[in-house]
Each structure stands twice: as C-alpha cells, then as structure tokens.
Image (tube, rainbow, N blue to C red):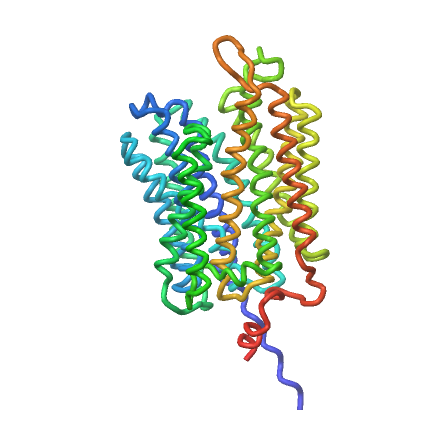
Length: 487
C-alpha cells in the first residue's frame, strides 16, 4: 500500500501573522506615552497654573504607577489570562490619555498620568504571549523586537510631541495619543489570542499592597531626593520605610502559598543575575537620553552647547530609535548562535564604548550622534537578551510575572540613573548670563559613571550560568517543575 500523504499545514491566518507587529505597536505606544509629556514640562506651570514642583508629578506619577503595576499585572496575566490583562493595561493607558486631553487641572492630569503607568506592563505581558503562541524558531526574533520597542517609542515620541507642542494646542498631543491608544487596543483585541497557559490560585492581595508601599517609598525618595534634599527627614524617612516594608514583604512572600513574586525562583543565579543585570543596564541606558537632550540644548555661550531647539533635539534622538529597530534581529541571531548571556555581555561592552566616544568629544554634533548610536546598539543587544534569559529560566506559567520583575528592575535602574546624573550635574555648574548650567566636565563625569555601570552589567552577565548543559526555552526550570510539565 502507498503511504498516506502527509497533511498540508494550513497557512496562518492574517491575524496570526499580525500578532507580532500588533504587540510591538503596543510596546512602542507605551514608550511614546511615557515620553510625550517631556517637551511640555517647561510650559506646564504656565498652562495649568500649578507650581513646577506639582508639575514634576506628571512624570513621577507615571514612574511610580508603572513600577508598582508591572509585576502586579504580570502576575495577574499569568493567573487570569495574558490577553485579558494586556487589554486592561492598554485601556487604562488610553483612558489616561483621554483624561489628559480633556482637562487643565493639574490634579486630574497627575491622576491620568498614573493611569498611563499601567502601560509599563505591556512589554512583559507581550513577551509572555509570544512565548506561548509562537513556534520556538520565531520566538527569539519576536522577543528581541518586543524588547527594543521601549527605545524605539521613546525616540519617536519626543520629536513628534515637540512638533505638536510647538505648532498646536498642547491638548492636541493627548488627543493624538488617545487615537493611537484606541487603535492599539482595537488591534490587540482583534489579533492577539488568549494564551491557554495559566497559573491558578488566589491573587496575593497582601503581597500586592506590601510591594506597592515599598516601591512607592523607594522610588519617591529616589525621584524627589534632588528637590527635597538627600539628607532631609522626608527622604531619609522614605528610604527607611522602604527598607522595613520591603523586608516584611519578602518575609510574607516566602511564606505565601501563591506569592505575587516567587522569591525562591528569583534568588537563583539563572533568574536573579539577569534581574541584577537589568538594573545596571537600565541605569547605563537612561543616562544617554538624559544627558544628550540637555547637552545639545545648552547655550552656545557655554563653549560646548549647540543651542538646539526642542524639536531639533527630538530629531537628534530619532537615529537611536531606528538603530534599535534594525539591530533587534541581529541580537536574536547572536543569542541563537552564542547564547543570550553572551549577547548581554556584548551589549554591556558596546554601551561602555559608546560612552567612551561621548567622553572623547561632546561638542561636535556628528560625534554626539555616533556616540549615542553606539549606546543604542549596546542597549538593543542587552535589552533583547534579558527576556530571553528569563524565558529560559522560568516555567511557562510564570513568564509574565518574571518578566514583569525584570522590567521593574530596569525601571528602578532608570530612576536611580536620573537621580545620579542630576546629582553629578548639580555639583558641576558654571554661570552663563543669569543662569547656572552644567559644565562639560560634569557631563563627561556622568558619561564615565554610566560607562562604568555598563561594565558592571557585563560582569554580571558573564556570571549567569551557561545554557550548554540544558538547551531550549525553559532550560533553567527547576527539576520538579520540569517533571510536572512533562507528565
């Protein structure tokens, strides 16, 4: 008898082919929402009648809400469905943008920006969906692209927002982001399937409250230390409170049957070291964005500044976004050939080399752009490797929460970077006309600090255990979990 013909696989549906682009669009939107308010900050006190200190909460509220909600929504996605929680995060982001478009009341604006902070969970949720839905040979490149959307969206958001703010009413910017958010929400609802992988159990409400209180105290102290004084009673109280609350939270998590964050899993080298590397990489990456924008806008009278407008400054950031888009598949290929820990280590070295370029010459726009491009290349390599390391080390039912913690560590690194760069620049100033501006050595010291931290991230990456003994996604899953999954 002739053998039965092999079945011909059906071609993927249109919505299946669009899953990766739609999720990447959501990640870009998240980064855009975080950056669009930056060009507005100098004018918001006049536009809203609020003090500069109150206006600064337009950024702080998003940071705090994103830091708290990222691991919480990641855990909720593992329990109740990643697509469902992804749609909730995109909905909160869009709703916050609509509120910003409808009001000039600073209190409502701050609350709306806090709602937008929920979008920080979009990337870890999307990475988890990609692991569940894509075949293994497509997962690496898709995850690399998803990780790069953070830089792509930030690079796109700043110049677009600056153009709108310069030539239109500032509410128009939020109406534009509302429309984009609604589009992203509709596309995700249509194209993204619900993952069948779940982690059942009761939601850890007590752990959620403890993490929210501890992170809020920590990040509020970090973000406001420059304004309130690092030695002030408020800042010391916040840091002391954060230590106590987070210690009690860790004690509770270790005893909970279904913890919000599996600290035993996170303490292992295969998961814990990538989290530490994310902290240092977030620090190193963010310094480039902070310092470049200030440096090119500095007055020409400083001897190093280029006196560029906000719009021109935003356009200077565009090449970095393009580079992150182009290099994400390169990162995936390196991770496939050499392993993600090698990719992460190379990313840290390239980051440090970029800051060497910035130290050598920060007065020529062409050299500034080259240095920023090298930093973006290193960031792409590192950010693309981090979730792959996590995916290889945790069971499939914990990917969203584990990647949420990894994104949280990046966020903390960025917050600490912002505070550290501000502290360096405040102590290295000179008077130009009636204003105090940072000196060129101050900027160079900030670059040296960021480059050093990038090298520390490289050392941490090299300490991550190799995958040579266990191959494939989930290689680092504990033996008892692997046995259960294979049963």
